[in-house]
Each structure stands twice: as structure tokens, then as C-alpha cells.
Image (cartoon, rainbow, N blue to C red; front, side):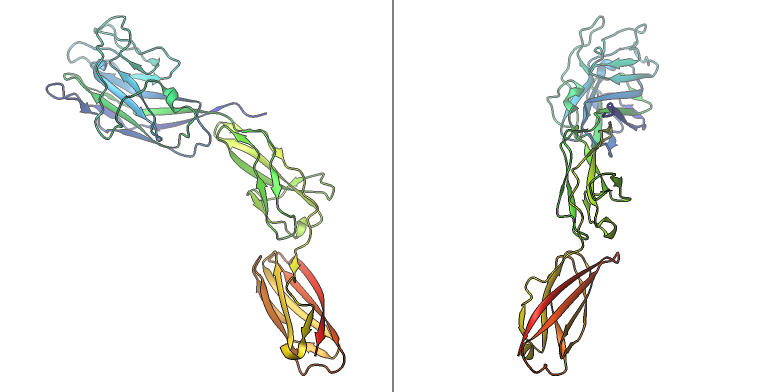
Length: 385
């Protein structure tokens, strides 16, 4: 079963000073402006965003406009033309002020006996006021804030990748009152658990040294795939994880020969992981392969004064090429090979060509990979004079 949705939380604890508007009610930006939170390392898409101000207080919260801007162009008003407004030079106690679409609107309150209570409220602009006179003014934010119009509601961020820089823009648009957010602010994200609807598959031919690739199943919730390769019996049973084999590709090794392989996938998100699903088992892993396609099976020994070999190996390693023929000796060749790279070489004849009728030479190629796995290829070549 998939895990339930989880949460991720990020905080900027730097205090924010809400500077008073200037003479003539010239709006003033806070310090800093904006206040930023960098979000990173979250895997998955969000299903809910909430914001909390730690230690908010202001002599007249009616004057305060707050805008939350996400990293991908979405933004929302958190509060504008709402809250309390105390007598001149009054300052309420700092409160925890949260914003959640499921909360009630921020009320409009006036008077020293009715400060804004701490709590969690829905993003609010110009609420229906039980008392007071919260007159709606157009929310205006100085550059570098994004231009309006500004929507209302944190749901604008649902379904998005939360990674990036989030910015809180705070303005005071009427003079004679100031305030602060003493403890900075926090963003909380609800992240769904990853889902995996279909099992992965294995692409490629399972031979020693040849790369296999996992083809991911159908993931959901913005989850990232995680893999584990497994070695099974020749019948595809009793599969066990291969130590360190956690990438989406895997090269079978000497110990895999004669076994079958599977890959297991898990959909991973910051909200939890899916149940793992495994692929079907591959066919039995074969040996490393060496191809001598392109090597002529009839060669003029006297003209060439040796045997010409064309080969390609599916693994990188060292090659030893040798040949035997009645009445002839050939110099052995050693060469480094790159995986998938075709090589042309000559086994030189030592001494004069043998006399007599046509002869046969037996070529033997041995490729050894970095793990000591050997693959041998033989070919018979008719020698012409």
C-alpha cells in the first residue's frame, strides 16, 4: 500500500519590519522586501500550501497588504484591508497568523478592546466587517513584485512543483502606524505519496557486459522512480537484490551468467513511496559476446603476409588473438578493446608462407573484461597462396 500524504516545511526566520507609509500616504515597502524562502529537494507535486507569520503585529493591520508569490509565476493576496486597527500609536501583542484556504476570513476589527486574535485564516481582502471600517483599496505592490491583478486563495499553487524561491511582499499603504513580523514566516506543503500503476520492464539482451535499461512503469503524484536490480535462479525464482545495482541501467557481470534478472521500481515522493512493483524476469544471462563479422573466411596468406581479423566486442577489455596452421606460425596480438567499437588487426606471419596445397588456419580470440570474465571466439579461415 502507498504511504499517506506527507508534509514539507521551510522557514525564513529573519524578522520583517513593516515600515510606515510616508507623508501623504505614500505606500512603503517592508524591510526586507521581499522576504524569500528557497525550497529545494521536494519530490512530488503539492496538493496544499499554507503560510504562517511568526510574531505579526501592527498598529493598524488594515493598512497592510501582503502578497505571496511562488517560483513559477502564481501568486495570491494573503491579507489586504483586514484585521484590527488600534488607537493612535497602539501596538497589539505579537501573534501567530496563519493562512489556509479552509480557514475563516480575516475579520475587520476596530478599537483597543478588539485586537486580531491569533489563528489560521483564509487569504482575505476587504472582508465583511462585523465592526470597523475596512475600506477596500486596490492592493499595490512596488517592484520587484509581480504586477496585478492578484487572485485570492492558496489553491493557485496546487499541483505545482514547489521547488524554487518563494517571496513574501509586504506593503503599508497608510501613514501613522507600523509593525513587524518578529519571527519571519513559514511555508508548509502537503505532498501526495507516489503512486505506481504499472510494473517496469527491462530493455536489452541479457548478456555479460551488455547494458540493460529499466523502462519505468506509470508513476503519479510527481514521484521519481527508484530502481533495484535483482538476480534470480535460472527458472526466474528466488530473486535477491544485487548490491549497489540501483541505477536505471545495469550491466550483467560474470556472476549473473546462467541466471535471470529482474528490476524492481518504487515511485518515490516527499509525501511517501508507492508499493514496489517488479518486472518480468529476463531470459538467462549469456556470456560476453565477441563478433568476427567482417573477417573473411578465405584469405591470401602470401599477399597479406598474415591474417586480417575484423571484430567487435560488447564489453570493454583486453584481447588476445592467436592463430595456428600447419607449417605456419603467426605472431600473437594483444589489444585493448572499447565496448561496441569495431577493431581491425593483423596476425603477422612469422617466416615464409608454407608450401603446398591450401591450408586452414584456426583463429582464436579471447576477450577479458575488468572483472576477469572471459569470452572466447573461434573461426576457421582458408589460406590461399
